[in-house]
Amino acid sequence: MSKILAIDDNQSVLNFLKILILQKNKYQIDTLQDSARAYDTIKNNDYDILLLDMDMPNVTGLEILKFIVKNNLNIRTIVLTGVEDIDLAISAMKLGTYDYLLKPVDEVQLFKTIDAAIEQNDIRKNKSHAANKFTLEDLQHKDVFKDIITNDENMIRDFHLAEMFAQTDNSILIWGESGSGKELIAKAIHQISERRNKKFVAVNAGSFAQELFSSEFFGYEKGAFTGASKDKAGFLEEADGGTLFLDEIGELALSIQVKLLRVLQEEEFYRLGSTKNMKSDIRIIAATNKNLFEEIKKGTFRKDLFFRLNINSINLPPLRERKGDIELLAGYFLNMFNLKYGKRIEKISDPVLNCLKSYSFSGNIRELMNIINSAIIVESSNVLTKKALPNYFLGNNNSSVGFEEGEMPQSLKNIEMMHIQKVLQFTHFNNTKAAEILGISRVSLISKIKEYKLNNH
Image (cartoon, rainbow, N blue to C red; front, side):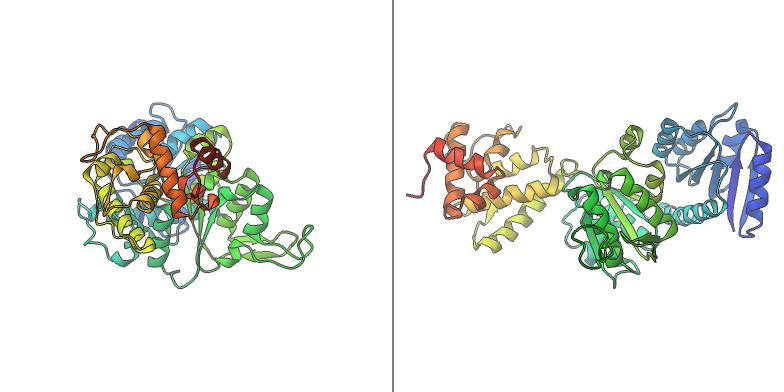
């Protein structure tokens, strides 16, 4: 039976919680009015859940949260407070608070939150009993991670977390910069989960205008708006029984966030133009490259939605923190694009590898892939050399490594001209394709062609 501790300076609140929780006959509950005794009580008892008031004399709720983090105690905290304070809520989130509920607490919501928190705590305990060093060999579902190339310990730890979280049906929030592999992790979770035989639907929330996203997300009835000539199922219906991956969740408009929150809480939604509620059987995995704590503080992201999504979370390290993976990934992309373009480039030169390892990769793995893609196109020898690398990359590289063997220094202007010429030749002077490979606009490319007097003669 799970053990709960409630700490509040108001004895009537504690009495209410004790009677309410004991009626369920599935939890043990202790109460504590004197917060000064909280440290010893928490440390000396194996509680699963802490129901915590924030505004208390002697020792505050925030101080208790800091104590839990400092001592690495395996207890999940649900904050119950009578004060709506965004700064306090954000501080509590950063200290690992599972949820933040306002008094008077809705009884149904409280028990749903307790049950979910206990489930997550079980996962955390399993994790703590696992080996200190995570390995690829210890994974139970190695095959689902085969498309994520890594030997990085932090990434492998995230694979293990993904396996654990896939066992539940909780929402998951994946944190990571653009290009760091968030969708690949989400797909892996889906493939391990009980929903693997249903659809995985991936949606970039930042790629839709507010009005369009609403109709695409929830679907619409015929005649709901001008142009709605027939009924249309939305992403929610498309993913029914499966997993809906919402990338760039921080880009969602507040009006859509409210509707998404209803889906998570009530498991139902309405098509646009309909008064008939539809049931939703989906698991939502969200991802963000934004600091959602800052977005909550600015008022652009809802605190209650954050707690509904962040039941489990995974933090993906950026490529610049995975230095050991850069050579591994570069070699993988070399083989991939050799096959695609019919090339026979045997290896990557040491100066190129040193350039890659010294670069910050703001675009992460996607940027590394594009750099190798572009370089393979223009390389004419059997070794990938610095002269084939994109000009922007060479111009922004901090590597102190010198030149390739026999290579003479050249101006950036000359390097740019030769690189553009090679890409144009590869695309048979198709300006649109060349601009796409070079990562510049077609207008900019035409301007460069005129500046350098490049042509197809």
